[in-house]
Image 1 (cartoon, rainbow over the protein chains, first blue to last red):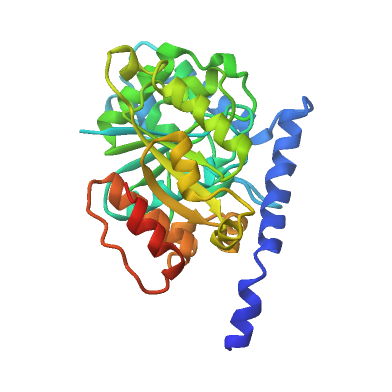
Image 2 (image 1 turned 30 degrees about the vertical axis):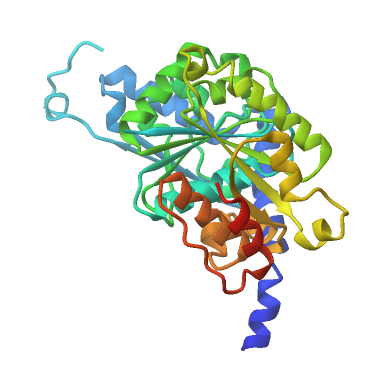
Length: 92
Length: 269
C-alpha cells in the first residue's frame, strides 16, 4: 500500500493534463475569436428572457457552472418574489 | 477592519499566483473570511491554481461594469468555506478595468471580508498599479536572482509613490517573500543568499519559501499548497508567513527545519 501511495503521489501530471484539456477546449472557442462559448450565450439569453417577463433583483439570481470534458452544467437559481408570482407584475 | 493585501513582484513567474493561493487558503483556514482577487486580465491563472477553473461564471470586469453583482461573481472554495475567489476576465480588454470601478469593488469586498488579497499581474502597467492601489499591506515576491531583485526594487518604489496610502503620506506595510529558495545552492555560492537580498531591498522578511516539488504537484492538482500538501516545507513556510501577517509571534519550530532555522532566527522580521 505504501508503495502504491508512493507511485500515486508522483502522478499529478495526468491530472494537470486532463484539467488543461477541459479548460482549453472551452477557452479556445472564445479567445480564438471563433464561435462563442455556448454556455455563456445560454446564460445571457436565459437572463434576457427572465428580464422580459419580470423584474427580479439581480441578487435573487444565482448562477453556477461546471464545465466538464463531455458535459457542462449551467444551474440558474431564481428566487421569484411572491408579488411577482401572484401576477402583480411590477414595471420591468 | 478589513485588510487589503497585494501580492506583487514586477517580474513574472516568480510565484505571485502560487503565493496568493497559498496565503489566502492559509488565512481562511484560521477562520478569517478571505477573498482572493485575480487582477491579471486576459491571462488569468488564479482560478486554475485554486482548482476553480471550471466554475467561473462572472469575473472582475463583469462586476466593475455592473453586468453582475459581486455575490454572483465570487466563487466559494469547496474545501475551505471562508475562502472566496473573484476571477479575472480571460476575454475582455483590460482597459475595462477602471480606477473608479476597482475602487468600488475593493470597498464592497472590504465590507464582506477580513482579508482581500489582490494577485497582481507582472509588469508595472495599469493592471499592476490598480492591484496595489488600495493596498494596506504588500507582499513582494522575489526569487534570489538578479532580474527578480531589480524588478522588486522597482515595485517597492511604486508602492511608496503610486498607492492611495503613499498619496496620503502614509506607508504601505511591505514584506519580502523570498520564493524558490535553494539553501544548498546559496551555501555553495551559486545563488544569492537571503542576507544579500535583504541588504539590497531593505524591507523586512516575511518568509522564505524553499524550492520544492510539492508546489508544482499542488498546482497540477488545483490546490493551494497549504491545502494540497499542508505538511510540506513550503506550506509550513506560508503558514508562518500568515502568522506574522496576522500579528502572531512566530515560535520557530526547530524540528526538520535545521536548514532554515539559522536564517529564520537571524533574519525574521
